[in-house]
Length: 164
Image (cartoon, rainbow, N blue to C red; front, top):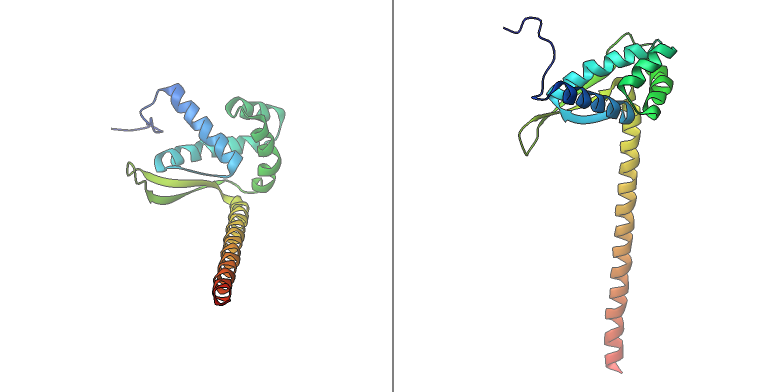
């Protein structure tokens, strides 16, 4: 029976598991959205939400505690500045797990773990990427059209030279 047994072991040692969760938490706070397996996403969710709840106190002890877990100063600075400013009013539920289906290689269930209030940031980046892609496609199309026009001119010039 699994009474009062909390957490997943992921077939790793305790130190390896702690490093994995720290890494996932750092990546989530840095990029606002990460793609991982469902089990890792669910474990990282509770891990990150505890960190964010601690960071909401916004005092020196909380900053030092978070720095002992997340050892990237830039990410901690962003957490205490931007992220807490945006999520600070929320009473909990700072992250969301969205299931994507199975991975092709090993059929593992894959999910996206994201910070809840950062959909607009992700969508803006996706829109920017889409615009770049469309601009690249337009320039490629224009290049092909000019090349076709040049080929048509060359074809027109050949019969004119032959008739002389």
